[in-house]
Image (cartoon, rainbow, N blue to C red; front, side, top):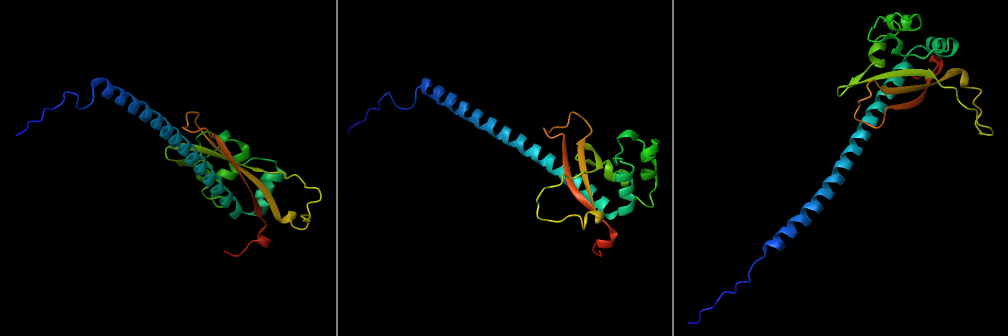
Amino acid sequence: MLKRFRSGEEGFTLIEVLAASVILAIAGLAMTAFFINAMSYNKANQNKTVMVNLARNALFYMEKRSFKEMEKYLVTYEMNISTEECGDDPRCSGKSMNALLIDTDRFPGLWDVLNPSVNGIEYTITVSHHKENKVEGGGLDTTSFTKHLLPVMVEVRAKSDDTPTKYRSTEVRGYITDESIRKAD
């Protein structure tokens, strides 16, 4: 029988194996950097979504309150509804917010709405009157219903500076409607 002799040049050399390992490592690191960047972008969007939902929640809360009361605080007194001047004291000693925060009959749960905590991050919410710019030649006559709508702006900010997001605040604008034109719930 014929014996076949094996050649001594089978397989890869050590240099070829090391070169392939280095190329795979570089490609792997590049892909890892891409996924880390995508994850941080996703986390920032998630935090912005949380802030928008908190602002919408506060806006819905304000929409359910008395139009006259909100108009009195926001327009007549030109106050912002916030707990920033109160610190951590829910019985706020500041004269401007004292009536709002302590009167739980007219404003139940206002302190909790203005100071939410989600996923271990504390936020502060400020509700203010939003003075709208009049659009010239807009085609819609707003004078007939502006007395029944109170434009408000709700701003949500993270309390701490070490929040893991590039979004520190967000705003949502809406209207508080007069009870005379609200739908029955």
